[in-house]
Amino acid sequence: MKASSISQIKKELQYSTKDELIEIVLRIGKYKVENKELLSYLLFDSSDEEGYIEKIKMYIDFQFEIINRENYYYIKKSVRKILRTTKRFIKYTKNIETETTLLIHFCRNLEEMDPTYKYNQVLTNMYQRQLGLVEKNLNKMHEDLSYDFRREVDTLVR
Image 1 (cartoon, one colour):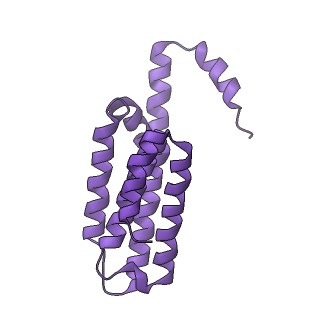
Image 2 (image 1 turned 90 degrees about the vertical axis):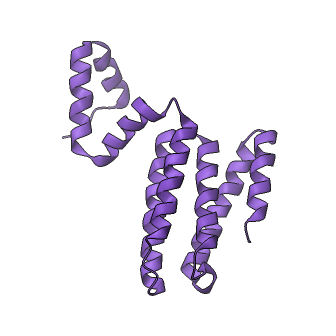
């Protein structure tokens, strides 16, 4: 079975009642954690972007605290998981400033982690790739915002 296009779904939703729309949204939220997280963001957090950023920063900080530091294998797995989750949260916002803020925070946590990421090529590449994404985002931003973020990026080690 082939899924309908977004335009077809949009046209069909226009003919639905309010109760039907609520039922559809709730049913979508039941099936995947990602759908539920997106709905939560749209309903509760989209109006307070700063609060949402702070929640994610606290989540990143906590995850970096509980990393198993026995060897680099476990560190790599944990850091990949943190980055994957952070990217998922970024995807919900579709906001360049939020993405840049969270990636800088991720890089700062990775830089402050003990043992250092510099002795592992995979972690070093991950760090450099995220800084590259931040640089790309800086080019898309307004000059004033870009300047503020660039000062933060300059404090990170290259």
